[in-house]
Image (tube, rainbow, N blue to C red; front, top):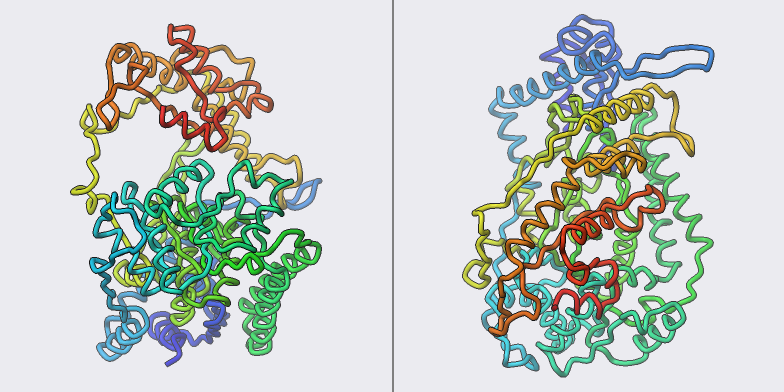
Length: 635
């Protein structure tokens, strides 16, 4: 039965109006024809507003749109649109009323309830978790010095038996050795010929070291700083292509230089364009939403295709190298695939993908043509780090066919099934509170987990307690030190508030050089650390967040400077005292040129002024080479 028919019946029974609905499942788009609702009291008062009638709100609900009402003002400079907060909130309240009423209405008819429940269960609630047990694995060629844990053997066996897998293993689970053993066992069994292991730059030496520790006779090729420089890149790839390797270990940043044949990516885009052209011929003449969406998707693909036309494949491609499996450690760095959505105004949704993620997507699709079912293995202790939409990207990488089978290949259809929107008061950069709608929670969690676990092997921190001993926190739990806002910071928040209002009042899209909300947020984050990051001439404020950090770090240094700590082998570390790690992605040395102040430099200079020897303070950035980072962290 057409899913639109139930919505039509709902409107007839609850609003007393006949409407037409066009649904295109290939795009997850809906068009509602309900002009009469814009003329009736039911449509403009009970179920809608005078500025957003019930028919328009139905279209919003079905297409996962968040209604926004704008006022248009005319002056000497032209027209400008300003968000009407009151009318917008009124429309959103009516939208929520419609959604709740539909949920209640569905259950009022037992036959309808049974039918819809059957449709849902047949489509989504039909996965039974497959169980894996690798206890039988002997791992020929592996060093007898290591005894792998049960969850490691399970992960190895899962990759061997089912191919493409997400190793969602918590920190400390031993993912590197799991990946190494999975590669070697697949090689031994003839399931793959040449694997490419992609790791973060700072983990390159460690990954190679652990791989060889477990498999001393493994033939691995490592793309480090000495052999993957620009002038040596072609030679390295020639070695990778012409010799027999168990694994090629390469960094995230170097992976982008391994190209797929441009003809393949062009064909991928051409196939998508042909699909959209075919869908356009099937779109109902009244289905405006689907038609516009198809045109937008086509434009995006055309732009990407034009960019490929100028690309030159100067280096050997992944096909010529012979790679038939890609294994990515810390895969959360590739989490942002772009997608089309009507929900882009919602917080918690970022449809703008990264080139890094698209690059992996294309390469995995290509390798899939060479080694079906074994193209990609991802590993991370934190699969989702920022937005709920990242789960959709993971499923596109490893569960694309399952999404398509369930009609969830478009983000909005997926989000309407598994996500929920909430509106809460949130503090703004200006210090004021504002109601913010956010894609903030999952629904239908059991079904989503079942789809995820169809390709994911999960190890939680609690699963590691018998293997990994985590030291107790001396204070019992993490301590949060709060710096009170200084008078100068409160004054600066008023400047931020003025900038936000100017941006909201601006008509049209931002032009190069215009202030944008992201810049306001960034300045607010910097100012919260130290006002000198936004106003270099500002005086030093003793009670700001940066100086609170300095005083705390100095206190710990002074309290522990005479303490002796032991290495795992029982020997004492050469340098007494506790080691402290200070993290900040803002105020680094690199921003000193643009912002006129560096939090990093201030921390070091202040600690030295207070009495900490300069030799006991190091910047990680000064040890950016792989060997240097290893020396710093091992010391």
